[in-house]
Image (cartoon, rainbow, N blue to C red; front, side):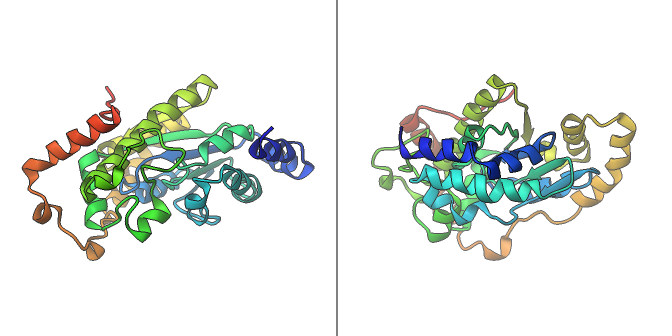
Length: 284
């Protein structure tokens, strides 16, 4: 039995974790699988409009504290979920807990299942090129820049589904695009894993999220709200959607169109897709 398995057994048989798990009985836990730069802060605000829902974006204890180290230390991710995150979740009185951080899908989904917790997942998908462009212009380049190492995966992390040999030869934009493909692969894998266990997943496109009808439709699907309740929510939804989205224009330090001609982007993207043998998730 390896270190991770021994730790898992110790946690699952402990009275302390048993009490935490018991307090989670009947509570819905909803997390996201998404790239970031995809409307997660907006999604959290929308979910918070529903009574009985505790909706948070990137609350403490924050996955960012351990995400990078957890890529090479699965036991750390397991301890974080068992001793910190789930303890915090159990402290909320609301019957539904939603957290829209894009970090949950970066090493914390599997330990959650191992602990016997079956979360629900919102698969939030935004156009890959738009996300890659945003990351590039913020200079958060996976595997290269300091901030990206805290929040994003890189092609040689042990848990990666789409590894790239000699990935350092990829340019900055290609690394951003690779990251988008990796997260979409996780959408595919995690959706299948959850459905096989009888869990629930909700596919959501960014374009749906930013319209009153699309946002209302998501709330209806998630919470089985009666039609009259959905209609009452449309006005506050519309007001919320009028607020500026987290564009971070003031801290963008690069301009993609100035560094790479638009006609070359498709070629660069195709090269990455061929390297990893995956062209992304396409929903009907």
